[in-house]
Image (cartoon, rainbow, N blue to C red):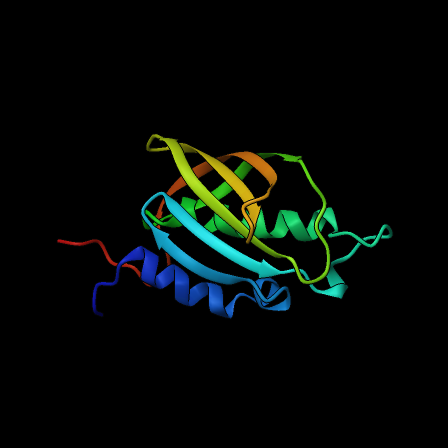
Length: 144
């Protein structure tokens, strides 16, 4: 098997992820400790008030967090996420979630995820904690 880097593998995995595909999430960039994901707000993503459903917005945040936290090649799973919503969005808006690693140990890591619209409007912020397992992502080999 050929050695692969984690960001390339994750980008490929994200294109096959059913939930991500359902929401039409687009991976813009992945590098160690960082990921940027984008989604257009579709009518199926609205709540009873006609604005973007919190679950849809959270999904964009979670996708960026998932990719950034797994970008080192070890399996990482969420322990806690705390999100604050600043402004509403609606149909036609483009949401970009950018996840940045703040601190990482062998077992945990903390991330800051910001969501903005194309015009730079700040929509939400999330602080997230991940548990880092000992196992490599499926499809990765240890580099010798």
